[in-house]
Amino acid sequence: MTRWGIGVQWALGTLLYSAAVFGLQRAYLPDLDIMPIPALVALTTGIILVAAGLALYIAAIRQVRAALHQRKLVTDGVYAYVRHPIYASFTLLIVPGIAIMVRSVLGLSVPVVMYLLLRALIGKEEAHLEQQFGDEYVRYRDRANLVFPRLRRVSDEEESA
Image (cartoon, rainbow, N blue to C red; front, side, top):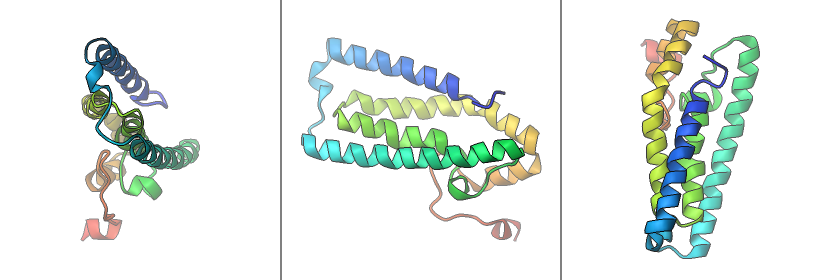
């Protein structure tokens, strides 16, 4: 497993699907090109989602980069709420924000496919993390969701009670 985990495969699958969707939409379904949302509302909503996604992405990258050098499992900060905040930032915020900004109805299918690809591929990455960190990772996996954040954190004390 590389330091990129399944990210390269996941991104490639996402890009291929996105290109196919947008190509087919432009060629055969141009009427589905624009959501029935005022342009200013779509742009504002999209910018907010993309900005939130970039903030989550940057926070996650900073945490995981520091942990890589120490060979430590990150379970605090944004990782306390979601096991894979880097994937979550794109799937839940950045890509949907872009689809809304450009008001693409079919573009909203991209995050769904991203999530399905993630579910199909993530087993390799999680098996690697379990092999590397053992029971510590298993306990963490049991208390933090894959990409949909838990609004209430489960602490180590609550988990062991």
